[in-house]
Length: 261
Ligand SMILES: C[S@@+](CC[C@H](N)C(=O)[O-])C[C@H]1O[C@@H](n2cnc3c(N)ncnc32)[C@H](O)[C@@H]1O
Image (cartoon, rainbow, N blue to C red; front, top):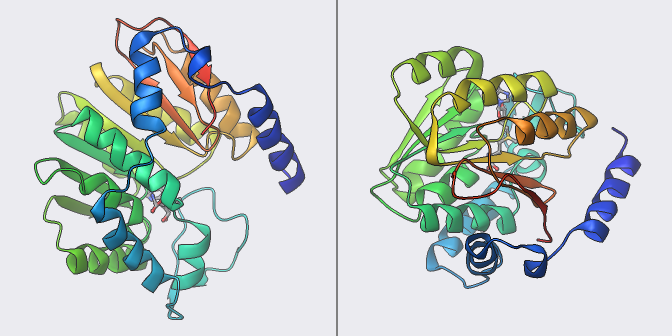
């Protein structure tokens, strides 16, 4: 998808997206107001953002082993850490949304596909020491930098796995009865995204939450999002443009919301 098409898509989303008044479900109305739109600062945001600020100043280059859809801005396999931090990581607004989602749903375990330098992982891990985060990154050098960041902040509830999703996921799912919360943020290709969803959805229960990153990053990702929304186990979905949230709760109607964020 060209940059122009992406920008047009973004403005179309802004135009058609609703606010709390377009939500009929009292539960989702409250969720949108109190969780998605909550702007209260949590003190841990500062610690995580100071790690990002250091990454943004790091000139060191690492060799990237790209297992995913690659980067729209850089096709070389040597990248400066500051460029990865600038182009690949979720912006503070979205990291903080992840923090609030975890704070709200209080999952026992979180699976993250796509660690990169670990900023989103830190937001997922920060709300509770009791929540265990398993985060998967295919690139060995990127994994090393993420581990340094986890050690720096001292969170003990993160298990960092250096593996490809295709190898890791089947093994992990075979020994897992149920998934509480999954953040899909790597390999933004249609087929791969649908595959990972189909594998994980087998382990989704009434309380499970899936969060997909970059659901409109490309035509393929938008098509994958359409497939996900139609799955019979999925009830409500929320499309915030850069992120999509999927519910399996049977008390919710099968409805797809497009909301401003
Ligand atoms: C968008 S970045 C993750 C950003 C991170 N979640 C954040 O916001 O801080 C995606 C990461 O997924 C990794 N990745 C992509 N495809 C993969 C695959 N098939 N297996 C393992 N890792 C993969 C890439 O190496 C990259 O570091």
